[in-house]
Image (cartoon, rainbow, N blue to C red; front, top):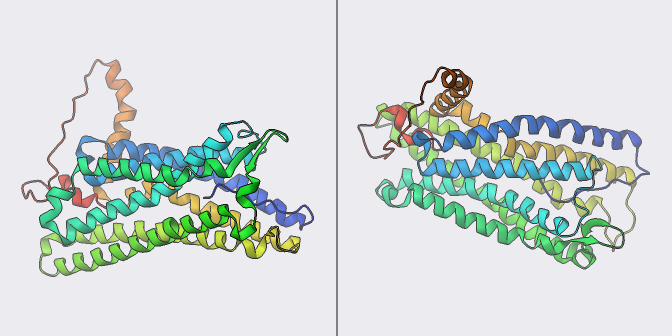
Length: 354
């Protein structure tokens, strides 16, 4: 989940080193196998006319960001784990880390965005029509993307192509001083802000929403089924996001306790290797946050499952229908206004809001 790699010393226990390499080479491809098709389907489903409400815009953007992250992660894995020199080129060396980190920043911010929107929709229903609209969701998503790119742009300074030795690495000036270096301080700030404060905010808002929905169900039995579904979805998404985000940040902040800096004496090589193994395992778990949202949606949301079945069925039957000369009907965007009582349960976007 980070754009750095920890290199274990060659004097460490060979068994630990081999285990680290094996874990990295096996688990990442499995996550890619789940993540790429899942995120592609997620984007398609959330952009379908019936799902294209304000929360669907955020979730479609989230699927695209996670897809971008996985693609860039493949490039980093090829470079750091498989020894394929992809970044040892001018411009490419400085540019790729910018987008790689921006994708990591943007994913939590989009989760926060649609959580805030749901918070407004549930606790302040009179403001829902004005604040929770697809056009506003598109505007907020674009603004968050710009913020993420601004935060990630400094990576273009941190990384530099060394023409003398022909490799891509951190700029010497950026890491000089160890834990007091510019790179370290900036990493700490962004870690605490994006990967600690944002998840805690999401958790707090979800707890408030869940308590409010439970109070509503005591008086409105007809809404109880939808409330239970919403509560389950909020719990699954928020807690899974936190469980996969916090450990990565914790391991990241502990690196100076295990890895030497220019102001430290040499640390036991086996201790460094064990840290690297733990970091790789935690990082692989963190990847699931970008790879498994589609499957969470499928498990938690009935309407999403129905749309998924419809999309997959269309993909399977379209060649046959096209061959027989059938013309597919063009879908129209339905009214997904939360306040319209005439719309059936299948059309209510509150079932799809996570």
